[in-house]
Image 1 (spheres, helix red, strand yellow):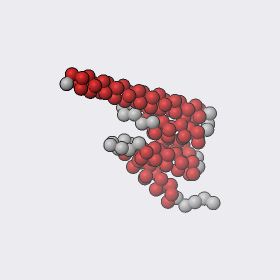
Image 2: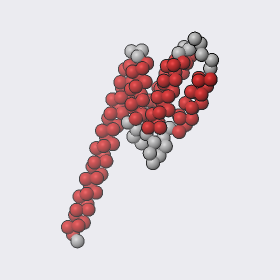
Image 3: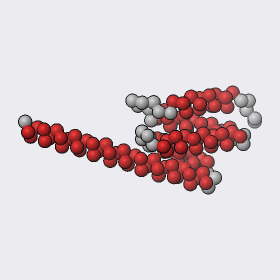
Image 4: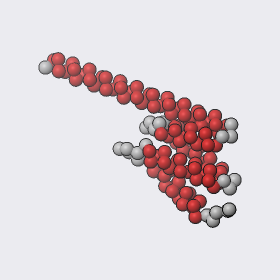
Length: 132
């Protein structure tokens, strides 16, 4: 019986270490992607910035402040593009934000408020008459 307890404890310890390593790796990659988005945004490359912030959300880790920061950055890129009349780029930003949160859904549904905001904004933009 003692041997079975030892095996069970070892398995539990290994499982906890594996989860910690996975979480840490994901959090690290989230920071890397967010930094890429920031760098691209500073360089004026909105498409690369969208990709970086979108990837940061895809690296979702519970309680990470970068998820909300990345969402806010994507929203502001969309708002800025919309303000400049660049509706296609605004749609890319809003759709990226929405799809990022759809992609990280599982047992929980993070970003529901962002999804709703994006749905409304995308619908509004698609109903605008095209300027061709």
